[in-house]
Length: 323
Image 1 (tube, helix red, strand yellow):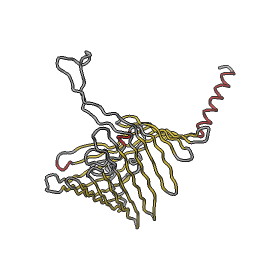
Image 2: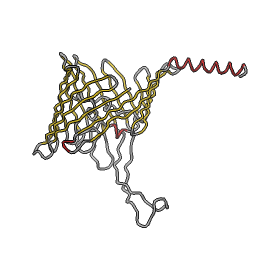
Image 3: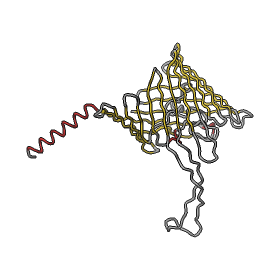
Image 4: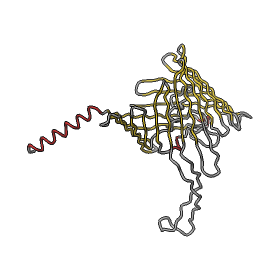
């Protein structure tokens, strides 16, 4: 290598080293799985999270911070970009959670794995199901900040058009010959979903609340699902309250208490769902952390009003491995 190339390579290495000195990068992964007895219906194995996360942060020339996060999951790759403006953070990308999704965790739930749904009926929307607004937001624009001890976030989703039904044509045709029509069911579009959430602490109690405004196109009924949670710790006890309202007839109210006993975390959660058919739930959770892996057992009792045909008693073994 001649002298000019040596000087050029050295200069490039110096620039890269200088940039690396200000940047931070990390990688971690997480797997959460369950083994459930399905109330005598046979053993089932599932997982709720199977992910690798890569994050990078640095500063721009104007002093603003920039962060990039990529999550690799079974559902695909999602990327978030966040710009710290000094007056709040602006987020872009296909992985931006709705504002509600980022703050509606259930303080009354003590399961090692099964708290991600927050409500027993779920959180992904549908008739009578609480909707955190995440799925209908899509590729969101987000703004978050903290003022006077209150952290808040606002997200705006993207508008989606309605799609008309298309009947499938398979008579006498072969896929690929140019005459085959792939059918699909009609789907209702929606306007840009707005989601608002905030959390704060008052006299030691952690309080969070939020609402998503989901406005459909056509004849579908608009809805504003909302939540409220309160968590409080006293004398070694963790107390939790949560309310999840689907705004279309279903409301779930949760209360729970957890503590540590003999090196294990234990908790009891009670929930009542007011809907067409009311349902009561009770879950007892026992968890043990063992460094890189954690294990837990849940017992879930479901009691549906009006009889015993749909009542269930389920045992679940949970395990989590992360790095």
